[in-house]
Image 1 (tube, rainbow over the protein chains, first blue to last red):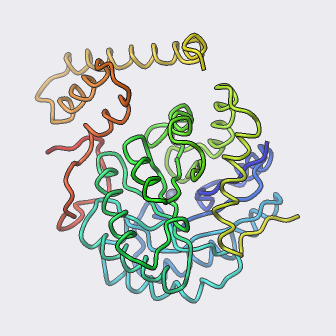
Image 2 (image 1 turned 45 degrees about the vertical axis):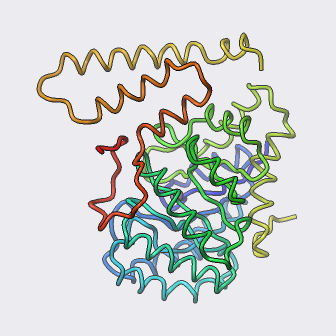
Length: 268
Length: 86
Ligand SMILES: [Zn+2]
């Protein structure tokens, strides 16, 4: 089995997790910028984090033969403070031409507040001006439906944004249809408690198809499973999906989306 | 996949989750004090399971979701609780 982990917060994981992922067939890992579980007190904290994502983490992954890519932004959980967000947004352009940066993400909403929407709009504008791919985080639990609607409004009201260059992550049964119908890619996050279980992710694939969909573990500092993608692949096989269908979903699909950024290349 | 095969794959898991849910409701009954809105939200969501039409998972999720469309004035914190207080 081969797969891409298109959304993993490797800074939160121990080195043994890299070993396990590489052993399970992982061919590349992509890491969106996110909330560290605590608030950074200034833009300097983000500067260091962006250095960690673009310099340190690729070296750690390389020890296991894994190419490591990343996405940059200030995440929605720290977007209530607009002044801080502006400072961080001003930092991002000088990192964008680094060789492993794939785009702007994971942007989006958390509690669906006015300031979160403003900061989302600023990121979308930056992505449009710099012609970057976009990776979107949708809110958790009771906030997901509303957040997904607001995010789609923001993206669709900017005529520069091409939906096929944006992935809306953490979809579930009540949000996936509107994401796909609007032409965006949809990410399914495999979490033990919230978001999707493997069985439900396979249900969604069976109901809505696998044309513009990927699966990720979004493994981070919370309760999450770094090998969730290969486990979901096993679930697909148990449900009678062919090895070719599994490969398309967990390997070829992420490559198809991510290759829209010319920097995403796997070693020959 | 045939229903027979799906039952072979998932029946024990669904049975275990169902008993857990039943035991949880019993535990709540044995507890003291007032419950908050989450209990009612859960009961309403459970009612979706008894309906025959497809889309139960989607309807359960919708019944636990904030249905409004206006952004709120300011984020009250970072967390979500799993049901909408109304
Ligand atoms: Zn994430």
